[in-house]
Structures are given as structure tokens and as C-alpha cells.
Amino acid sequence: MNEALKRELSEKACRIRIGAVEAIHSANSGHPGGSLSISDILAYLYFHEMNIKPEDPKWEDRDRFVLSKGHCAPALYTALALKGYFPYEELLGLRKAGRMLQGHPDMKHTPGIDMSTGSLGQGISAACGMALAGKISGKSYRVYAALGDGEIQEGQVWEAAMFAGHRKLDNLCIVVDSNGLQIDGKVSDVCSVEPIDEKFKAFGWNVITINGHDFDQIENAYETAKKTKGMPTAIISKSTKGKGVSFMENNPAWHGNPPNDEQFKIAMDDLHAILNSLEVK
Image (cartoon, one colour):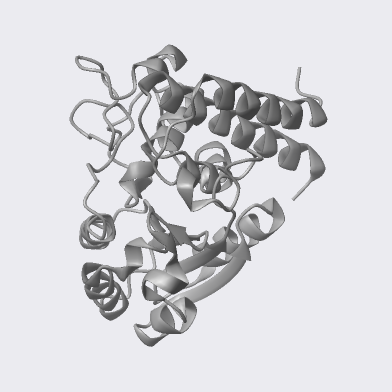
């Protein structure tokens, strides 16, 4: 990836993190840790990879995205706002009565949301259905989904994995945001999901493991996925929960807690320092 594009995507990822934290602070509710760990992936998908039209959110031939780890909606909402699906100011209405942005994605009321999610494990099944529909109808669109590593403790994920492998859904690419933490602590302590890669391989998937904060690796993974025929692709993204905010990084306490005013200031200082390092004007 050339340096200009890498810098642009790094900026977008940082702005996604800023918007997510702003929204969660405004709501005094939400999930910052996983929103921050998935931000680089969302920046790549929405500002480089996916074939979408913000001015026509229901365009029939668009690529689809399903946030199976739906509690990380603040990051997705920010990506959508930055892309132009709705005004950025809507982010401050997160989880507020009568406002558009609910705590989990809602396809009926939020432009750009392709599937309502929230109950963990269900999003990948919906993504499989979208991918199969594309195959049956002869459409060229691709389907993307993001899951958490804690989420894949759900049995429905593996039923969907079996289905996708059997149906050879090579228009489906998922990413497992493997930050190693869930609400109760380390995934390895709560209920280990390893080896994630071998499990997906056993169901007939192409599997790629990457550093989820390295845009060269992200690009290579998604380019490989597009070239892979006859099987779906699972990208195992090794990431840092709370990425970019000093006191949130690798701390399970920030799975689902909003920052107070003092913590919010520190978070904004941390993230704006990253923007300044990128020489964003």
C-alpha cells in the first residue's frame, strides 16, 4: 500500500475512534473497547474496499456489511457518518430516546445498516444468507461481516461456518476481531476459542491471520479474499482492545463502560495526538 493511502486510512481510523468515544461519552453508555479495536478494519472497508453509494444506501448491487458484534455500533456509526450516510452530529444522539442511533445496529431506521444485530452469533448467519442470495441471483456484490472473538463462543457461529463452507460462498469474507478480551476478562480464561484458524479451516474456509492495525496486512488479506474461489474467507485480526486510548488498551474494564468527563478529556488528548502525528489538517 502506498504511503499516501496508508496515511489517509490511518486518519480515517483515528477519526472513527474519536467519533465512537464522543458518542459513548454523550450517551453515558456503550462499548468503547471493541469499537476501538475494529476501527482500522472499518476504515479500510468503508473508505477503500467496499462498493457502496452513501447517496443510495439501498442500492441493489452494493456490497453488504454485517456488524455481527453489534455492541460495537459506535465505530460503525462513525464510519457511516464520515462516509456521508447521515450528519456527523447524529453521533451525539447515540442511545437517546427519539434519536436515530440505537445501542445496536437497526436496519429500519439507520441509513447504511444492512442488518440489525445485537444477539451475538446471529450476524454471520445473516451474512451467509446475503451471500447465498447473491449467488442465486447472479449478483457480483460481496458480503463482509465482523465478529468478536468472545462472540464465536456462540454455537450458531459454527453452524453458519459449516453452511458457508458447504455452499462454497466465496463472495463472503468475515473478520474475527481477536482482541483477546470480553466482558468477563480474557477470552482464554472465560472459554478459550483457540485454535480459531484451524476451526474455520475444518469447515472449508480460507483463513488469513493478520495484525488488525497494519494496513498493509489488512489490504493483502482482503485482496487475497477476493481472489480466492470456491470457499469463504475468514480473516483473523489480532487487535488491541481499546486501541488508541492509553488507559483503555488491553483493559477488559472498558468493554462496556463509558468514560467520565475527566477520562473523556484524556481519551480525546490521546486520539488527537495521533491525528497530529499524521499531520492531519
